Every structure is written in C-alpha cells, then in structure tokens.
Image (tube, rainbow, N blue to C red):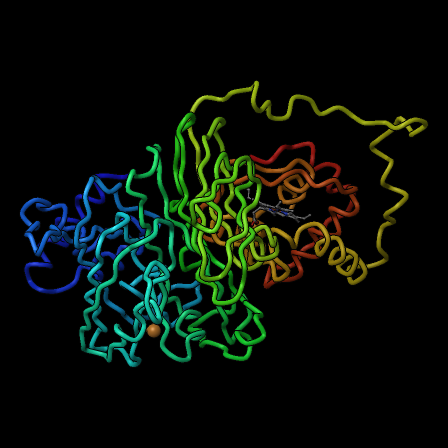
Length: 500
Ligand SMILES: [Cu+2]
C-alpha cells in the first residue's frame, strides 16, 4: 500500500493533532481515499511512547484508515486496551459526477474508518459528535457483546463526547453503524464502517489488503439527476435504490482511484455491506476467490465465484492475481453495477501468462452449413433503409436501447470513469464517420470526451451498416447532440478506417 501518502498525511495529521483539531478535513479535501487520521498519527508517531500500563493492559491508540486503505496487521502477542477516537460529521459530498448528497459520516467519509484490533483486546471508544451536527448519533459495533452493541452507551448529542468500552471476544470482520432512530435513515446516509478483530494468531500474510464497503442510496432525483439530492424515505422503504455504490460514491474505485496489484501478488479484500437494504452478490469479474471467510467469520470456503454479503455483514476474500488487466468488482445483481454505480476496478500490472489466459487468438468468419459465402451482404436484407430521417431515428433508438444503453446508459450520459457519454459528446459531434467506425471495429486506448479521460475497451458491435447508420443518426439527433445523418454507404466507407 502506498506508504508515502500514508506517511505524508500522518505528518499533517500529527501537526493538526497538536493544535487539537481533527485531521479529517485534510483527508477529505483530498477526496482521495489514501489517508489516515489523527489516530494513525498518534500511533505511528511513537507506538511505544503511547503505551502506558493501566492495570495489566498496555494502552495504545488505534491506527484507523479511510477506505480503501487497511490498517497494518496487529503486531502483538498479548491483549491491549485500544483507544478508538470516532467523530461523526454531517457533510455534503459528491455521490456521482454532478450529484451531491448530504452524508452523515463516521470520520468525514463513507464508509467510516477501518479499525483493526486483536481478539481479546479491550476497545475504548471515545465517541464525539461534531458541534455542527444537526442530529444525535451513536455506534452499534457488531463486534461487541452487550445491549445494542454500544448504541445506548454511545448516544451523543452534537458537540459532546461519550466514552464506553467493550471486549473483542470473538475474531472476525464486523460492521459498525449508527443506530439512532430512524436507524434506516442514519445508515442510508452513510453511517457504517468495518472493524477487523484478528484471531490471536493473526491472519496469514498477503501482499495487498483493501477495504471496500457497499451501500445503497435513495435520492429524490433519478440516478444521475444533477445537483444536491435529498434523501427519499419512500424509496428507502420500498428498497428502491437509485444508487448502489462501493466506498460512498460512483467511481470511488475506478479510474485514478482503482485498486492496484502486480501479477503474482495475493490480494485480500475486506468487504462490508452497510445496506441499509440490499444484499450484495459480490463478484470480481475475471477472478476466482481462492478463499472466502464467508460472512466475516472463521468458516473458509474455497474456489468461490460470487459471495453473498448481507446488509450489516461482511466477508474476507483472498485471491492471487495471475494475469494482468482490469478486474471489475461488481455486485452481480448486475443492473446495480452498470446502472447504479456498484462497480470498481482492480488494476493488475505485470507479465502476460498466455497459458493461463490467451486473449483472443483468432477471429475467423463463422459460416454454418449452407450459409451464404458473402458475409458483407448477409445483414442487408434484414434492415432496409428507412424512408426518412424520422423513421431512421426511430429505428436507431431501438438499436440503441438493445445494443448501447447497457454501457452508455439509456440517457446517453455514460458512467463516470467507465463509459464515456454520448450525450453532448464533443468527441461524437466532431466526427460522425469515426463514430460509425467505432461501432463497427470497436475502440480501445485513451480518449478524451468532454474533458474527461477514458481508457477502456468498447467491443465491436455486430450490426449491419444500415443499423450502424441508424444508431449513429439516432444519437446525433438525441441527448443534446448537434444533429446529423449517416447512410449505410457512409458507414461502409467509414468502417474501413479503424478509429485511433
Ligand atoms: Cu447517526
């Protein structure tokens, strides 16, 4: 994990800690998940110095991290009293591009910071609710044994601090969340995080560890509707989520924020599900989990494709990455991935291994028995040229809805960092023939659309020249684009030039 960032942030935090102010602001402003907090600072600054003896237990400050960073393994063979400072903060943040939301958070981000302790440790929670909060908040630790998991003990009005402690009796990966009424609303606004209670003997060493937490969001506006979106209680009650995301926003784990690993490394994902409503069918496209601690417990299953993570539950998945490429983290209830945001990337770099994965080796014409030899005319009779522009747009819409909408979205706005927009696309409007060629030949490599970079792959779409003409004509005349029209002949010419 990126040590330099951690250390840098740690220094900043150490300074602000001296001035008695939190470091969550710096961490948030960067809007990048690679930050730690005051707690990390205190601990990293001098572990030994902060250990005093209280009774028999040494007292240490917890190292906590913002997702997707994970605190380092516990390096102790004895129990300790671990002090966890938590702060609840209500703040407006980005939910998706152009979409803001009034989040309620632990530590200024969604999910809350990850905590890592050892089985048998005593956790002292110093729970502060920021003075600017409008609501009281508390915390229910699924890792705690006792009424409410600490909910009652930690109930805290704005501008107050409460303290309570619990003993981590059982190892596992546990959710914590706010449990102030209306509980569903506090969770729906982002109040959840993970605590790992390592077994006494620790976890086997791996090369990379990441913290990923899914949550569902209920906004008044539809998915992608711009502006500050209020919470919609009715949708929440109907469990009709507009957004399902990893780590608090659409794109939190894509593009520059993608998780990273190198070929040959072992990767461990600590995956939680805050809910409030939806069960996650957690899957990494192109990987098989070698091991899954299902439901976050001791049970280990092997060779798993998709693991269920209930709302208010967690799982630990482990796998070795053998082949370079982009591996896509999804909720395999798949409309959530491609239409509601539950999509992240693990970028693996290194040497190809063609024995394990060959990539496409050949692309030969497939002619079933008796099929005509001339493939360039096979589609033509099926799609006659439309009578006029209006008819062509109508035909193009049908082609769009069944061939393009899954990626570019029904409204053409695309998915940040994954699928570029066709709506108002400067790239599309600049060159209609190139667009036709993209559909016929596919496209990969870096492109810039409306100022944002994309480096992804669009497969060639098997359509006739007429269908391509129709679908491009439809997009040119929809989604705020500037108009235009292509014929089948234009497409036949255009597709001879490969895009890029
Ligand atoms: Cu709350």
